[in-house]
Length: 210
Image (tube, rainbow, N blue to C red; front, side, top):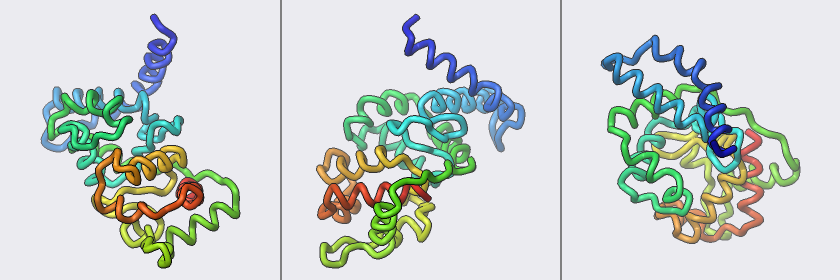
């Protein structure tokens, strides 16, 4: 067995106890088989996205406390291959392809109900710069405040995702693929098209800190 397989097996095993206890609770309107299948899928998600959706790797985003409508929308986009940035193609197209609508809804409900990942401290000056950018935008560059869609504390609203506490490297990568149109997101492309790399780094440092 390859070392990567051993690590994955160990992570899944560590998740089993915490997630398996949820299977006993079941879910409204689900059969025992459907509930067991959902919790098995939650275990699989946890290999990359961490226990209860709090990822330890900046490659994989935190899902804990993410808005349920956003999770659903993205899983459907992965499944029908309309979200086509490189990481989506490499990881999530295959993972989402077998998911039923009911499983997608179950995953969204589960992860959205988990406690959020805590913020991380960082460069105070950079964080303050990012906070101003998030709250005020840059009118001279026609950049609106991020808070107008993502909420005053970046907790997300409906299909606008939670950004608070998200890994800075992951957020930076998403801003870059949206800006370069590797990830199709017309509204967000219009918002971030004029952001400099330095502004992006300040913004994601702030978001990771809250």
